[in-house]
Length: 144
Length: 90
Image (tube, rainbow over all chains, first blue to last red; front, top):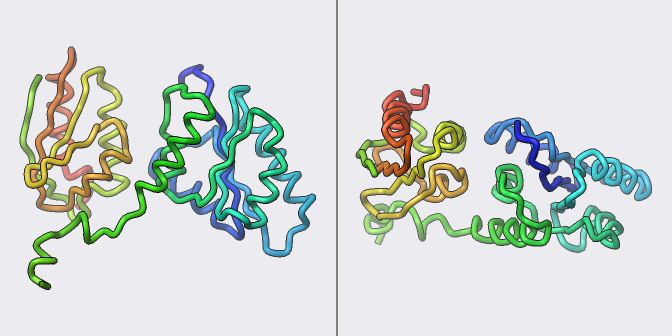
């Protein structure tokens, strides 16, 4: 392992989505020491959820920033995460999907937190496509 | 620069776990490693898993492996072996 500092990541979602995204990423990329999942139950207390996120941020922070990836803009996980935005060391990207977590997990360069947030946002958008526009042109021909 | 042509022969193609093995192997070399689909010419950096997944190389697809750098001979040999071994899968 290198001693290079890494930007931390906390994935925050309704239900178990965050845990499953981190689990799937771990299966692909390997150990994710710098990433935590916080899954907020539908009936969890806001203060308790805020405390869990705060703890997760502390655990993954290596002093160069922490990126929070939340499931949905306007949802409770994002709203609670936004309470940490007054710190300069935190950025939030909403609408988390698996490629975004893989991007966060596999970036080994040292971008700034701001740049990494932009890269992860862009990766998440690029990963959404109608697969038929990219795959099996022969199938489209057959169906035409 | 060295180049080889191989065909993806494992059942699931260059899916996430296979791509992860390729990326982990490619990352052990200082040489650049590019894979290019023969049919569409789309290219991927073999050290970036999302780039590799982006070319969606399923079973049967022919790929060019292009390596460039001081350890290119070893890199090409080991990477073609990984494909020829079907990534240890069916």
